[in-house]
Image 1 (cartoon, rainbow, N blue to C red):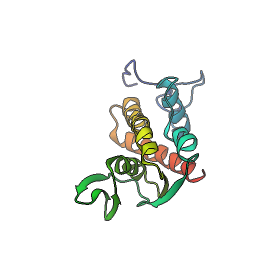
Image 2 (cartoon, one colour):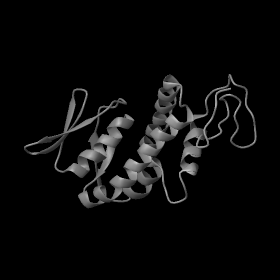
Image 3 (cartoon, rainbow, N blue to C red):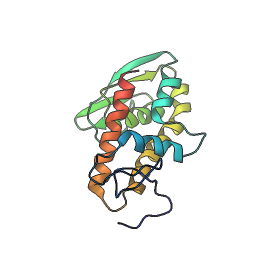
Image 4 (cartoon, helix red, strand yellow):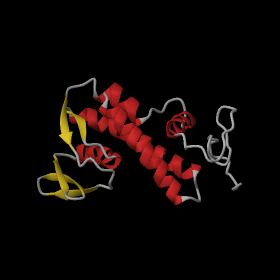
Length: 171
């Protein structure tokens, strides 16, 4: 069994680890939803996940729908003469300000096909730090869980992002 650090969470299905007192065989499936819940619980009481922030803060205000690429891909923000531009693969999205560009970058990197963007840029700017912290907490938590297996990190992140996309789409 690999050596574990103090910061790692116990999860079923991996090296016969446990989260709720039950042990699972090693060859069982990786519980992505349980990993997501464990990462959110481990981060503290005051922090919310991407899904909770989106449901409680974004969907309650007046929004417009933005079409994104629809694939989990890294996005880059470029400064142009007319504002900012988010580039993911071949798709470029024009943004009037940096807050909107950073907001769209978060959801582009999750792989969302469409996303709701608040009309009020101050709402977007207010939500950005919390959204970015939630995304970084997710990525760093998965890296901490599987420190030596990069393929497993990517696999778990891909499936957690798929679950988050599904929950955001059903909103």
